[in-house]
Length: 279
Image (cartoon, rainbow, N blue to C red; front, top):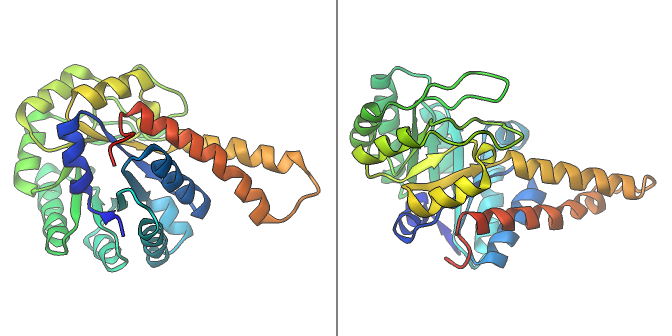
């Protein structure tokens, strides 16, 4: 088994000058393609179950799927809860076999966010798992606006919660279809100056690939969450699979045709972040 915690893949990334992708999973086909890509690139991988995924598939089933893939892989695999909103969410993920919890208290006042995140971190660490927290608020393309991370608040948040990784808001957005203008580097450097915890960028699909590569190698960002660009690769492959033979109706055959294109797209992400050859 190569099931590991978030800390076990991010600390080497921080020291080695690369970042590990947190790949957003929606179903069996994409998560299997992600692990195949990690195997092909000899890279660690973080499989993430976010709120949308959990609405579609029960958390205990996702835990079994992630653990099965880890058991058959020869590279490190993290089973990660993305955007858990309550202590009960996080406890349920641990019960389901997850090795990493991301608690999202970013909409709470600072003191409440610290208190709630610290409780999740203690819960995770007692169970031998890792915890990621978020300070500042990462908005959504076409939706809720972001609130940038304040460096001094980030320093207090990291110090008082005991988290293993810290998600920050520095111009990144969830669900961005195309690369935007890039991240706020002065804000990033100010956060780095007062913290030592590995940093996480949610909405990594909206960060220009050249900047992702540069920051993976030269900053404390050790994890980029990648979802939208891989969902787009899946959607393109699915449309092609259906249109190639309109008479075909077997869903297994159709969905299998998505795996190779998604795997190749994921391999590009590993290479871009410098994670290839690290496992």
